[in-house]
Length: 316
Image (tube, rainbow, N blue to C red; front, top):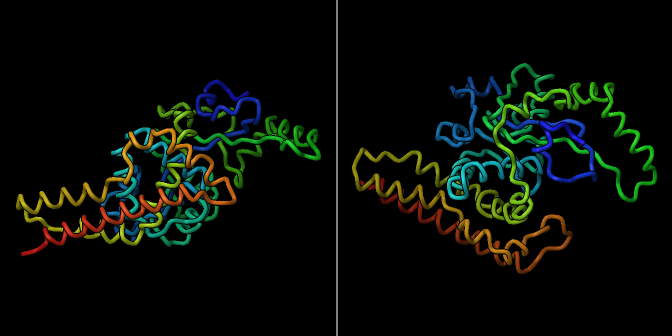
């Protein structure tokens, strides 16, 4: 059983797995890159989504990365559906790339392909061990991510596997967990878990996991060039303080910040069932594909309308 202080952050897997350590999440950055572009050290989602960081941010996709899924879900749970997606879509406009896996973010930042990105602390700590120019800031109310180990149901060596888990839970094993290479907080280090007020609503996380991943793909990953172009226009518009231009700009921001699915629609049991386990299957779901196509078209239309409004506001 995990310690009481870590138990609220586990995903309710009961006695199926053992928790051997945990990670926090935050923003990894490249000091050389930030200095080159005169950017501040980022500490919050809002900073990464600000116009200042346009083109300087990397992240992975929640459909490809479980840790990114947890981070995106934490945004929606802490900010609410509408404000959370508005923040994510503004952030999408700042992305230089969406990587296939989480470690692609830490690798890209270390190499100077972007200034900052969203990662778990172990990726950042491993990079820091090799590169002096890499830094990391834990975000306020960071999502806590326990590290799980279990014995496969069809394991040919279940006793040996169980002994290995027991070893990692021992004093010597926990010392290994904390070393560079794994860089996890151990079960004797409660500080990171205790300092965050945010605890994931597990039922909500599981219920909309497939839908959230699909919606992110259609509104951000698949729209990245258009999203970046739209926010570049929004951020670059000079309204000269004229009310009619300001009104058009506000309309454009609203269009570019609104997902194609309301919170009420996202609670529809039939829709949720359609996407349940979608990314765990080898074959696609034609009905889900049709819905995703509709989301993609609706997002494209909103972004196109936002661009039109910006162009209208920019006229002499």
